[in-house]
Image (cartoon, rainbow, N blue to C red; front, side, top):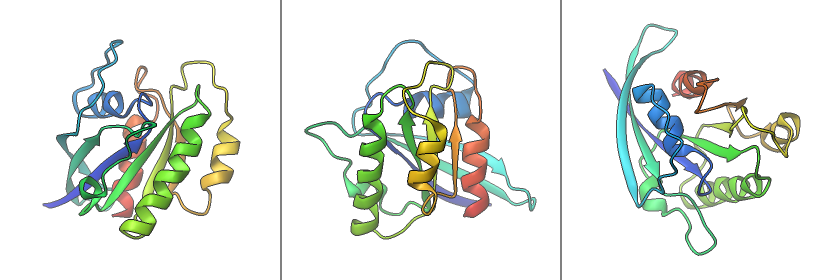
Length: 162
């Protein structure tokens, strides 16, 4: 079985941890738990070609005003999920900066852009986000860690590219 490291990147509070918990354990919590450093979970997925792949999911603490994601946590990743919050437009700009940081520090990696919290009233449109990431992302998906919408699809889309 092939094992691949996947980094979860995005601004603080976008739902990276909730997406991982929904994907790995089918759990959702209303409580906000700020990640400190990195937490690693794993899940085996079967790609469309029948290949089994172990995804090592690195849930990295979110970028903030005085904290940027350490590239040492991203090194060795086969790809990443770039998570944004549809209710907070500033998370889109932060996501663009994260892509630039990864590309300049490590190189181009495949990623799926996830606009999380589709169960809430968004202040951005999926079309706008798609247009901003169209040339870079493997796919751009709306998602909800609460309802499970497109959670599995996002991880599977990335696994298919690895």
